[in-house]
Amino acid sequence: MPSLKDQACIVGVGETAYTRDKTSTASSLTLQLEASLRAIEEAGLTPKQIDGIMPFPGLGSAEEFAANLGIDDLRFAATVHMGGAAPVASLQSAAMAVAGGVATHVLIPAGWNAYSGRRASETVATDVSSMPGGAIARDYYLPYGLTAPPQWYALMARRHMHEFGTTPEQLGAIALTMRKHAQLNPRAVMRDRPMTIEEYLASPEIAGPYRLFDCCLETDGAAAVVVTSAERARDLKQRPVFISGVAEGHPYPADEITNRADIFRTGLTSAAPLAFAMAGVTPRDVDFAQVYDCFTFEALQQIEEAGFCKRGEGGAFVEGGRIELSGELPVNTHGGLLSEAHVLGMNHIVEAVRQLRGEAGARQVPDAKIGVVTGWGDFGDGSIAVLRR
Amino acid sequence: MSAPYAKPLPLLEGLAGEFYGWCKKRELRFQRCSSCSAWRHVPRAMCARCGSFGWEWAPSSGRGTVFTWTVAARAMHPAFADDAPYAAAVIEMEEGVRLVSQVIDCPPDELDIGMPVDVAFEDVTPEITLPMFRRSP
Image (cartoon, rainbow over the protein chains, first blue to last red):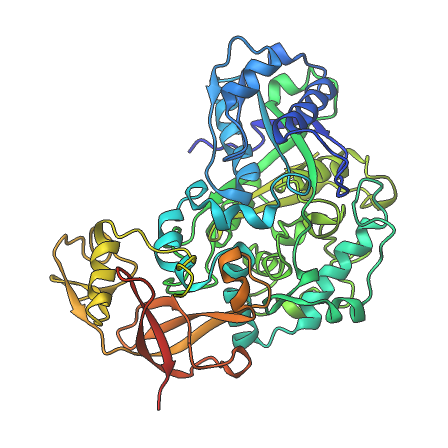
């Protein structure tokens, strides 16, 4: 059976500055174009050599990117409609495109002015057409005051606390770890703002059981990566990072969050075993994991569903420094969406690449060889890539 | 005269229109497959269990329990600002289907998983009635 194992590589990454100070006047598109140019240049390519573009859902069309970048021969244009799971799922589609010869260099951008522009917290509540399941949310959730992602996911977090005894302090351990890692990252918005468990517990409730510090940041910024075939990657400037295993998954039903036979079975539950099997490794072989941390519980749940621990054991797993840089599974070494910036998970892919290249500076995981990146979006869609150097 | 109703409302189109049409008559009904008798919600075109396109709007007992909930301490939609803190709850009906609603006579800090509730219809506009819930006596 054909496999995407090691068929494609990430050969360039780029980012804008990440800010949360109203100084940014750039549009979401301009931010993404800046990050794209950096990723293309870092790969040793010119914009005209990009022949595939996979924009984030709702944040620009491939045609618009191509027109701005001067790409006059676009051969592959696609968007994966999986919300925050889209960037990692796009790695899969891009790998298929380059492995199948449909495109040579695929650009995957993501970014927004989610602080100085329309705030991230306002988008879904007022624009249900942006996601699959939007009509269901409109007709069956919004009239009852269930209007935004922290509220949807809080429903699952509360069930987890009920069924497994997961505690606020355990969710807090995730928030504190991300904040601790951000202190080592010059790009992180929350650098120089360390946090204690007392501050975490004292933060106001937003969507109970979620407190303010269970919620990701709203920031301005963009990031982008360039994917090409393993063969082509050998000729390019950077040490290639191989997409060794990759998969996307969808819960059932994916467009409705309340009527699942097993409420904890999300897209990652089915995707993770596929990606690990493709890469030929197990969760124990992984040197770090960059986990989509829109909210603390989602990070905990993905740690469980990816197989780093058993379901129900995530609370104990994240305690005691196990997910810190010096622990057995460093998670979100850049600070994540909670403390670096909310760049829709593209910053997680960039960080994974930096770690595998050995470019992560003070937060480098020593001799990192294999890393995992996950994505989470909409009502629990999931994606995962096993990357190796 | 009170201010116009500003909260989001369902579009009364297709199957959603039929579901809320029953609510307007103060009847909570869910789709039930004519072939395998499976209940389902939200409304769908066909039965995912047996593949049948045949179904009816079968009456629910109106009884359920709280499956989970979240407390919107801060409204994330401007129309709910005056309600905060309020709780949006998932109710598991006796028939097995779940729906999002509110337990209107229960303060958020008194909600509990498994709490028995009964449907209580609220006419929010002349056209639309929402199925809400009250604590079972």
